[in-house]
Image (cartoon, rainbow, N blue to C red):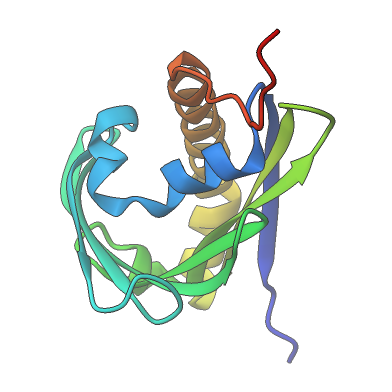
Amino acid sequence: MLEVVVVQQSEILIEATPKAIFDVLADAEALPEWLPMVERCESRGPRGIGGERVCEVDWGGRRGMLVERCTERVMRRRLAFVVDEDTLGFSKMFDEFGFAYDLVPEGPGRTRVRMEGLYRPRGFLAKMMDVLLMRRRLAKSRCDILGYLKTHVESQPRRLAGPFVWA
């Protein structure tokens, strides 16, 4: 029997360069500054593929911990993670539970950010929970995360690229 892999996407247009957005997304320790559901986060291991970030979160009133491992890192283009451990129950309900950010330039100082969620429900009960509840909750979380990212990045002072000639 073929296993079902659920892939969901949400996107947003942000008035910032891919570099500015990538730098924010890649900085684990700064996640609590812009993402209210993350109370604390720290990096373990290398920064990049194989590196982990351990986050204490409050996901819709449920407090817990997530250990996310970086699986892809293409500078200024893509950043992806898989959740290896958690205390919220995702790893009991889903295999290959992960997410990715794709950054697509849309002109000078504008970037389309696409957030993708990917997972494989484990068993009949998980498939039912996915259809009845989880897809909507995860879609809302992705939209919230993208909204917080947009607000944070667009509120940062813009750095102008040089060189400049002063007349």
